[in-house]
Length: 324
Ligand SMILES: [Zn+2]
Image (cartoon, rainbow, N blue to C red):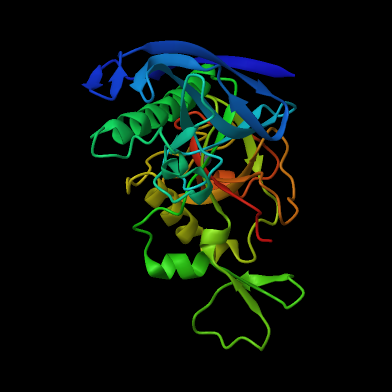
């Protein structure tokens, strides 16, 4: 099972210094997603200009990134543009006829193995090529944005985007969403700063299971996770705070599954509901990557007989290695 999306790669603005010439090429490439976890995509090498090292050589560039694709449920997982992982989008350049590959990652992070400085001749982090590194980084960044936009535009694929925990989550919520586990790993509950825990308990921080954003298709079905939190009534306001922090601090208005099905009458108060993709409410094993948080009303949150649809919004957050 596989599917394709198309996206543009390149920067239309030419660049010229004595040692490097970029022609402003923009290409449309096809990205094929194959079923499986931790797959690599690498585009064909394309010509972007020329470089003057030991004579004039063509400069080739290619995109590469890592993804997972669950074909059965149509879920694709990719890195967000700022996610500091070597799995994220990178733009690789190489002068023709050499093995001197230079990686420019979308995210800002030190990927020692990829250091461009290791190349003897092809090094664009030099005073001779001012601004070139930024051009290549911007190519990687805009390619990743284009990739996520193209996946979203298919309107059939559910997209998990790996991201770091958003800034701006109040500390009290952060603590409430951290979990406490027995020495054997079994979940005791959410962290209570006032409680005196016994020796050997493990406190798992929210960072360790915040996965990032999850964009579901328009009207995509989802259902409650049964038994999702040790104490849903207490933790609910914090889960919505996490969602709000992830989406720029804007308080959501209107239940995600507004008046669907028609037997459910939505209330005005929204909580961060633990839900899963699909039409069947179910318990989820700890360690799962399938749990997402969407703003839903109490009526929906308390009804495990129906499924819901992403009607008023499609932007969820997902929990990685849930409660494990
Ligand atoms: Zn509702």
